[in-house]
Each structure stands twice: as C-alpha cells, then as structure tokens.
Image 1 (cartoon, rainbow, N blue to C red):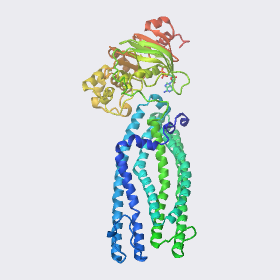
Image 2: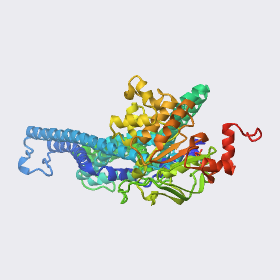
Image 3: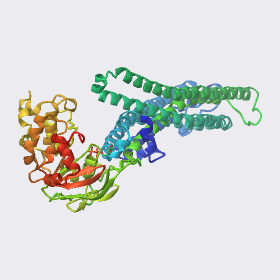
Image 4: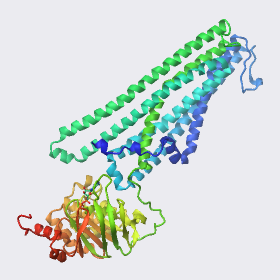
Length: 625
Ligand code: ADP
C-alpha cells in the first residue's frame, strides 16, 4: 500500500539524459579537470597500442629483410637493415618510451577524474539537499522521507563510481576500439574490415541487454527506497514498537522488504552475467577465423576476396590487437550495468532537484519583492479554500477573517476542523487553491518565504528539538544570530528559564535526540522561547498547550499576556480556557468558520462554542456529554 501511495522519484525526472544534465549543470566549473582527464586517458590508451606495432615492424625488419618503416619519425633517426642489434635497441627504447607515456597518462587521468568526481559530487549533494528542503510540504506528503534520503545518500554515492571510474572506463573502451581499428588498418586494411564486421553483432547483442537491464535497475532502486523508508519508520517509532511488542511484526516487514530488494537485485544481475560470456564467444570465434585467414594468406597467398600480401610482422600484432579488444568488450557489460545504475540514480536526483511534481518549490529569496518587511502585521484571509493533494474534502473552505495589528485571535474547533491547515497556509507551507491571504495588504504569494517566516514565530504541538544544546535550540529561531542575553530573555518570556538553570549544564545542556532528555513541558516551553527569540511581529501557538501537564499549562497561561503583548497573535487551542481572554474567537467546523466573537458573545449566542465550553467546565447536561 505504501508503494502505491508514494510517488516514484524516477517518474518525477524532467530529463531523459539525466547524467548529461548533471555534468552540464554542476560540472562546468571543473570542466578543465574533466577534459584533462579524458584527454590523458585517451592519449594513454592510444599510445599504449604502439608497442605491439613496433614489435611487428621489428620482426619484419629482422626476419623478413624489410626496411624499418616508422610513420611520423624522420628517416635519419631510423637504423638500416644492416644493423640488427641497433634496430633491436632502437625499437626497445621506443617501446619503453611508449610504456612511460602510458603510465604517466594513466596516473594523470586517474588523478583528474578523482578531483572532478569529488567536486561535482559535492555540488550535486549540497544542491539536491537544498532543493529538497525548499520543496513545499505537499512534496513530502507525496514522497516518503526514506526515498528522498536514499536519493540524497545512496544515489549520490552511486554517482561517485560513475564519475571516478565509469567515464574513464568508457574512454578506455572507446579509444581502445578506435586505436585498434586505426593500427589494424595501417597493418592490413582488408583484415581490419573483416574484424569490423563483428561490430554489428556485438552492438546488437549489447543493446538488447542494456534495454532489458535498465528497467530492472529502476526496480532495484525502488525496492531499496522502500526498504530504507521502512527501516526509518520502524526505528523512528521504536518506542511504540516496544510498547506494543511489535518487534516480530517489524522483523517480518523488514525481512519481506529486504527479500524483495534481493529479488530485484538478483533479477538484474542474472541478466547482466550472461552478457560477458556471449561477448567473449563472438570475439573468440572472430579471432580464430582471422588467424586461419592470416596463416593461409602468409603460407599460400590471398584467400578469396583478399588481395596483396601479408607478412608475419603484420599478422602477429594484428592478432594481439584483436585479443586486446576482448578485454574492453568483456568489461563493456560491467560499464553498461554501471551506466544504467548511474542513470537511474541521476534520474532520481533529478526528480528531487528539478522534477515536475506536485510539490512545487517555494518562492525564492531573490525575487523582486525581497525588500518586503512586515510592519503592521495585519493578517487577512479572504475566501481561502484548500485541499490536500491526497484529500477528497477541502481541509478549509471559503474561510475569511482579519486579524488587526496587535490583536489576539483564538481559533477553536474539533480535531480535524482545519485549524492547523489555516496556519500552515499563512506560513506559506502550502499554497491555497482559492482565495488570498495577505499580510499588510500584500498577497503572501508575492512575499519571499524568508521574509514571511521570519516575521512569524510558530509553535506547534510537536515541539521538535534538534539534537544539540538548549541554547542552540532557542537561538535557532533567529538563525543563531542572537546574544546569550536574548536567549535568556526569550526563555524567561516562555517561563522556562528557571528550569534551564536547574539543568546540569544550564543552557549548554544537550537535549538529546528530539529533546528526549527533557520533560514534555520543558520541550514545549523551549519551543515557545525559540519562536519569540527574534521578537517576531506575529506569533502563532498551534495547540502549544494541548499536550502539556496542567502545571506547565498554567505557567504558559501566566506568560501569555507577556508573550502576546504588542504582537498579532493567533492561539489555536483545544482547551477553551486558553483562549478565553482573546480579543476574538473563531470557531471552525469541518473547514468552515461557523461562529465568531468574544468569549462572552459566543456564550450568549449559545451555539457550538457554548456547548463545547459547558462540556469542558463540566456543566453540560448528561445527555450532551
Ligand atoms: P486541526 O488542526 O483542526 O485538527 P487539520 O488542519 O490538521 O485540523 O486538518 C484538517 C483536515 O485536513 C483533516 O481532515 C485532516 O485529516 C486533513 N489533513 C491534515 N494534514 C494533512 C496532510 N498532510 N495530508 C492530507 N490531509 C491532511
């Protein structure tokens, strides 16, 4: 079921050539490393073929009385046929020089590919993370966090082998094949044509394999994403798993997801392992046929369709070259396998960074409106309607209200009435389907999210804390750019300063993963301190007191008048006592505002609010309760 619900990142990719796109986008600044690497790898592979060619020429000069004919070298340098020892030393020196160039070129290529790979990976990783964190929240509703993490982690690591090894292997294969054709044509073009006839067979064979392997690789990646997501949710909810002794159930789920992953991997490998032997078979048959033709040609004369002469010094290097092509051909399947994996990985990364999916990106900071600053903090909702992408009913429908500067508005209603949704729309976490939300008269769609959110202090019931010190968590509300005094002041305002000073290391106490070393009430008040540390113009408390003990609630309640002073405040509360003193109270039901007014007015109206109030203070008649 999870698999169906989660949109596949691969399908989000916006390009059919994701690897090329990645190099184009992120590799430009280091293209000199890439070109240097490709150039030295090509020179290395091409020059590396000269050794056997030289040996062939030496054989003909020493045993077949032919002149030492070396292209590109001046005749004056070349020893004559009457000096066999000199010929041997001369050719030997050239072979050593060829090997030296090969070794040096190889080292240079490896170094440059390595530098290029690390630099481009760094850029891709950082950019992909940033793109992911700037997605609107509906993106994370539609994609499992495990999938996104796997793209940012596994898939980027997968690309390392592509940039560091596979490109170089591809250059090696291509240049080796080209070099072999060039050297073979120089030796004997007719035999070279015969060898080239094997090309179409091998090409058809390999493209057949790669077409079939690619979708299997996508399958492997999908299963791995599912496994990652499962591991993450199981460990995330480890407390619940233990409390309900769900270990055996979790084990079964992980076991089954792991088995699916193994199966998918097996399917793709099973096909891939057949590729190399088949290539080898075709190449081996061609080598045997060439040997037979060559030997017949030297001993008897040109076979049918061939003309001219062939010497031993030509045939021997020729056979060597054919043998040398088989190694790259043998590696071809591995390279294609690696290339399809890398392509699938790149597609998923593209799905995170550029893909066209429902979760569009948020408004960037550098829009023309970046100078916008909230001053009066006058908030207005006009006929706002919003559906979650996976929800059938609108979560809020035709909601209109205005909050004047400095006013405190309470929002109440049953669970699921749409209270949090309204707040998330105001924060720009989601974009409304219809209607407009304005701050100081400006549509928030035109306000960069950074300006918008820095003007709003937001506390929700989760009170998520980062695994760092208390000070870090409070200062986070102002990008860390606040003095210790401001941190303490915010803590005092949130009524948590005394609790913090009683901790073992005060403000330097580590709060543990998600703040587990603190009580729920302390966490909640630290979250409030974080929201007010940079003195925001607007404060939103979203059920900030719903899950705390009554003592903590009283502390927060006592602090509330200080917290809301001079601020536009929106308090969402389950307990109506929290919003009793608000300037205005909105009652939401099924996504619509059904009542509005002060506490007294609403009691007098004797509608939904009055009923809820009576239930909460315990004077409702038994049949209603
Ligand atoms: P409240 O804060 O009043 O409890 P919410 O605003 O959280 O209500 O939810 C309003 C409606 O939207 C509910 O029906 C809820 O199930 C639905 N909803 C909330 N969050 C999501 C989400 N991320 N994806 C889909 N539906 C959601």
